[in-house]
Amino acid sequence: MTETTEESELHNGHQPQAEPEPEPESKAESQPESKTEPGPENKPEEALKVEPVVTRADPNTKEEDKESSIQSNDAAKPSSTDQNARPQLRKDEGNRTFTMRELLTEFKSDEEEAGSPYSRESTQRQSNQNSAAMELVSSVTGADEEGQSRQRVLVYAAKRYAAALEKNPEDYDALYNWALVLQESADNVSPDSTSPSKDDLLEEACKKYNDATRLCPTLHDAFYNWAIAISDRAKMRGRTKEAEELWEQATKNYEKAVQLNWNSPQALNNWGLALQELSAIVSAREKQKIVKTAISKFRAAIRLQFDFHRAIYNLGTVLYALAEDSVQTGTTNPKEMSSNELYSQSAIYIAAAHALKPNYSVYSSALKLVHSMLPLPHLKDGYLTAPPVGNTFPPHSDWKRTEFFLNQEALQQVIKVEQKQVSRSLSGRIVDAGNTDKKAIRVYIPDIISVSASADLTLPPGAGLCINTTSGQVFLVADSWESLDRWLDALRLVYTIYARRKTDVLAGIIAT
Image (cartoon, rainbow, N blue to C red):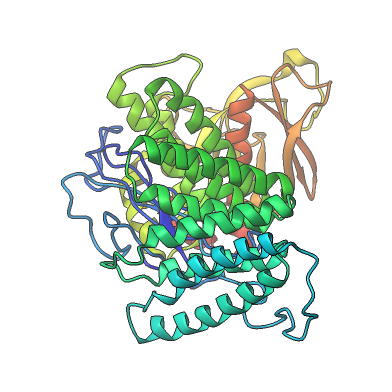
């Protein structure tokens, strides 16, 4: 899948039978090998493609509409059809605007005093390091005329940062910016180049990031971009022990970046992708724990930015991978979702990503794979414990566990009053939404103000859900906290789609 020149992709290490790939938000995209999908009844014939995007820059920057990526050898363009025998899902790493601090502006003045408080030995060591890095940057020629022009700018910038560091070896800003120059130069290396190699430039960039963060441990941008550089190095090494160590290091740097700057959905998204890559290398015993952690990072990214379609899509792909693993191993845990439930939940997130970005070919292809896994003609259905209509806080004995469904218009309680039915229920039977009791609970999407977990002590035991609407509050209780998370996500996604005026797209998805 191709988007701005400022993205590169993280490959989904999973190789399920038809697995969607997640999207990280900063540099590029990649796609895991596809496999035939052993999913629910109608098994799709293509695989979902994961679209990772890791971009160097301030991880708080909003993603742009234009997106491009540097794809790995096994990644396919979003517009093309995967020719592999088995389908696959691409990770979406997201799109970030590449910015380089003081690349051509606010450079250290050449007129600074010649005197330096640093020892001759320290200055000489820095000079030697500068020479090695300069040699690498200067030897990059660029794959085309545009690349050559850009590389000339990068070489000029590198010379300025080298001069600044010779005067002050502890100038962490110069170290950070030079690391960015090296990292961008790595993207400028011709695919067939061996001297310098992309890995050499990235390794040198990592050294600069290490030095910068040692001097300034709160430089969150450096940890974020350092993690991207490490991820790029890991992707070159396949599923080796060395790659495992690099992915582990990348996750630690993303974690540090988030600790220093918690309000960064892009860093959380990329952290989730790095964990997903790591899960494909580690032992089966460690895999499930790592995948669950990846899910929590994608979910955290979405809760920071409800319309963050890349993280939404990536969450769908990781759930799809879990479903694939469940089918392949044949293991079931009563406390965990079944493979069919995982497939259905995966489809919800992929459908939501497509609704938010309907022209994005990766999402369109993935949706074709999982469309039949939705509880059509609804986006989601399930059970919630609800009070009688008109009585918000009745005795606990009056609350009843009943079926609800969610579509583009409302969250609707299903109270069956006739045998004749029209739409499919959780049990596989048919439910006629038109033949529901007029007193059933119905929450219209445009009326929603907020949704949240509720710890109100007057609610029956369980995971409380509070829907704040223009007409007042609606309280419900989910079967578990995990179930509550899924209802909260679905409600927020449908409202976000409504707020972004994409309701008609969602309606088209679930109408058939």
